[in-house]
Image (cartoon, rainbow, N blue to C red; front, top):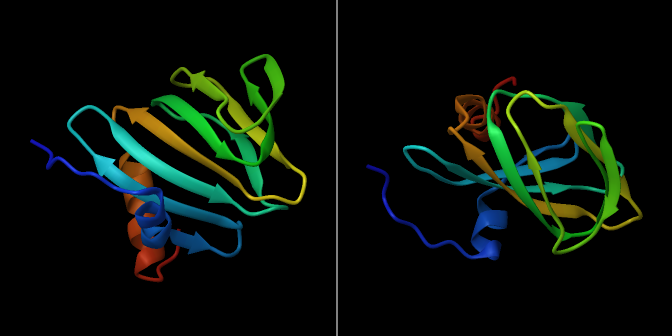
Length: 127
């Protein structure tokens, strides 16, 4: 069983790894038996490229503006807006403006790929 946790936004940001080549900060806030909570910050000019994965994803935009694509739908969103991407459905977006984009993701089931990526970045290894 996963250990219960409370994290502030500042703690999530402080714990993030930074991929300078991609302009992305990523923090795994917690991984449970069935869900995983991720905090992400995309710097202006970074790309939240169109991608798929075998996990369901719920997300909430906390800061910035994003032209988001989920499947066939494209919308410009801002703080407080949210989205759901079913497993294996293409999603991604374009950062709008000069402000960083910050959002949280909830994955189900947890993503081993994200844990591996963050671990590799933390130790300075290749992705």
